[in-house]
Image 1 (cartoon, rainbow, N blue to C red):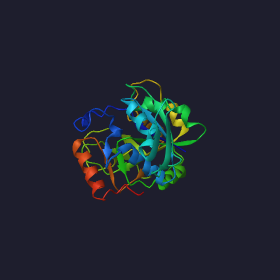
Image 2: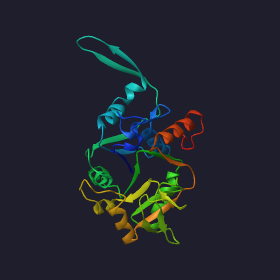
Image 3: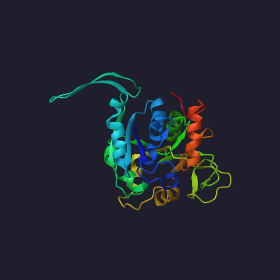
Image 4: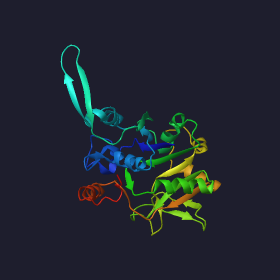
Length: 261
């Protein structure tokens, strides 16, 4: 099953932390936040990733293309026929497959997802999340829940900081309202960590202005095809310098709830 990660945005609200790299590459404890997200999935043996890139995609490509060199002992022989020998690899990411997909500099989230349809292949289900939020999500329980209810899309509903929007729900957990980022009043919000049936891609278009959290989600609500997986554990986006500091403080003090590896 593919894991699709949105990592193409500009991250304008956190420019005071890093203006020269894309938001998913901002580090927590020396590793990009996107790496932490991927490690969460890998802990549950999901290691086939599709990264939807845009802004400063070269930084993301450089990190993963040179991952072995960054993580290994290397012997270099200089001369006309230079040679590099990787003698020992010092990482636990063996077997990860990462598709680095150029989905457009200006494309919004819905368009980015639609543009990687060819990489989903024959898989009937794929996972999808944002490249700027970590949590101790039970991925196995999330996937099992999605398979149990038969709806097109499952999102993970989390307890919010006050500035996010809320989900309306009926008694069986079907989403009846999707309001993106009005002032919250104590309910749950969209925390990402979606599971999607492949046919969800047919709801999306290649229009670069298509925002995943607007028309596509409202369409799912109309069709009663959106369910929520309740997550009461840790979840935290990294949208501001304060949140950047919080996540690094947790990690550096060995108190990061999302770290299960």
